[in-house]
Image 1 (cartoon, rainbow, N blue to C red):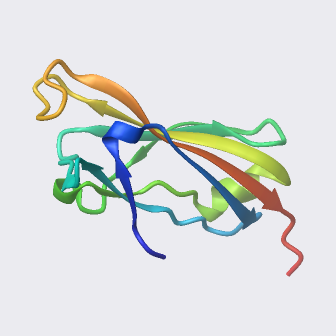
Image 2 (cartoon, rainbow, N blue to C red):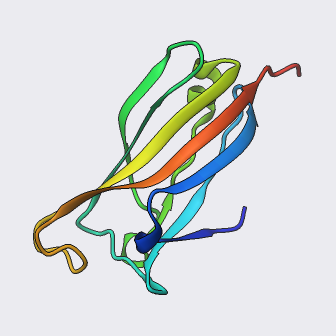
Amino acid sequence: MATLNVDINALPYKLTYNCVAGDTLPLLIQLTINGSAVNLTADTLTLGGSGPNGATLTGRTITPSAASTGMFDGGLTSAETGAWGNGEARYQVECTFPEGDANFAAGAVKTLLDVTVNITTDTA
């Protein structure tokens, strides 16, 4: 899967995907600001949302794959898509920038991704 560049000046980045229940939904992201990578080394990334059957996912921590170059996987695991069942699920990825951050000196909380996933039954 190709890496999606998301500029911090255009947040939250909205996406819609289709996925089969129980499948992994990789979503490789590089966070940038004005074309330059955002260093995520000291930041905290979390993912949370809810599915059509009422199942929720609260505050799963995302470990960046390459923090110094703004790279992380903002997708879902197979367990998450399987637990949510058929229908529309929504989740968000949020980043907490600590005080002293190069882009947010006073610190900030920003929603990076707002994702809708249409989950269908696995018939295999």
